[in-house]
Image 1 (tube, helix red, strand yellow):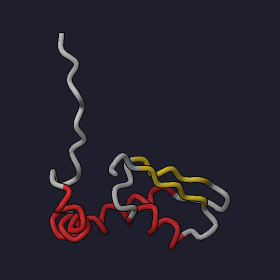
Image 2 (spheres, one colour):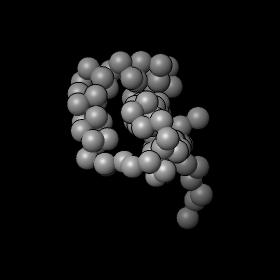
Image 3 (cartoon, one colour):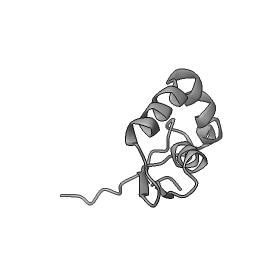
Length: 80
């Protein structure tokens, strides 16, 4: 059995497209609609903490912090 090296595949498959990620997702996936609905559904209260796992470019974490400044928000993503 050969050891195969795992290769990371960035969002949109190519590193050169990473700067365009927010624009493309915003247009094609109605990102603001579902992320704002998710924030509303979470019913965050003062003092709570949020972990945004696989946060990508961090838009969800940023929007949570803007709407709930007292909430501690941590975003983690595997992309380099």
